[in-house]
Length: 118
Image (cartoon, rainbow, N blue to C red):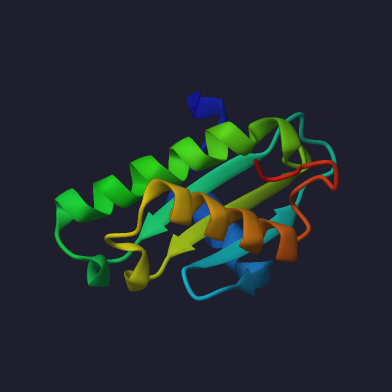
């Protein structure tokens, strides 16, 4: 995913946290901030130290990033959102991670209604 789709700066992360609407399931927490003048969505991914060592955290981030990339055509464009992974995500399969992300994105109303799981 291109860098223009990512939230990297701490101030931008903090703004989404401060002015957020949040939704969660057992695996992920989503914080979202509406930005009506934005051309495309931006995402920040956070995996805490409770999710194992750096190798495991990077493994989780790569799988979350790939799942979002696959869902990109179905995501709303006028929003910044953060995906926070909970410790249970470590060791889940790619299919389980993606289906859990789809579930929480639907709860957050970030996924278009024309999306159907294969």
